[in-house]
Length: 215
Image 1: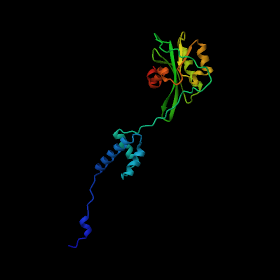
Image 2 (image 1 turned 45 degrees about the vertical axis):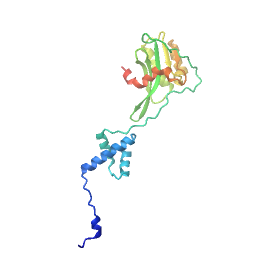
Image 3 (image 1 turned 30 degrees about the vertical axis):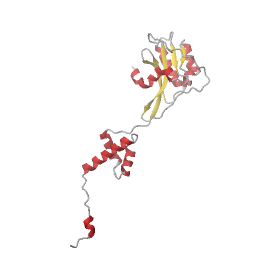
Image 4 (image 1 turned 135 degrees about the horizontal axis):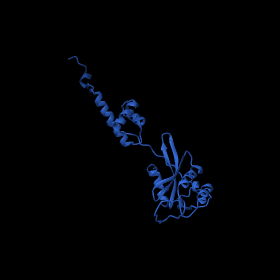
């Protein structure tokens, strides 16, 4: 019939519509995100290309927003306590202590707040009975000066008679300037045991609910 042999093996290309292609890309984006939850839109774009799906990274970002997919950020653990110093360490005075009102025990701690271009440190003092922040300071470094601002604010507005100040053994709380502020207002000093976060569990509450306590 004058027909080439290769014609018998010819398979016409399937006509894939634009909508079908987008659905395929969306499905693949969901699969990649499920397998690699820390991938952002650029890494997902690269993964799509490895799977022969050539898509602009801006389009991938748009699709991810429409699908409600966002790459998770791997949080870096930031240490806020430095207990390697030669300053005096005080005993724990609040263990099993029952509170009946405010200004009986203040608990101090330092945490950090993540912002757009990094993070800042928050030094705060919490009244254990009322769960309210009574003094705080925000700064870019973990200098003793940051911690000192918090009790200075607290003692200016609160009654410190028969008050216990509790903290960890960090150098910010054990330094001479900080201790002198507490002693000047006749505040008893209490510290948690080294390496025992449960002794200072109330202060840990600051890092979780600091925004709620500022009222």
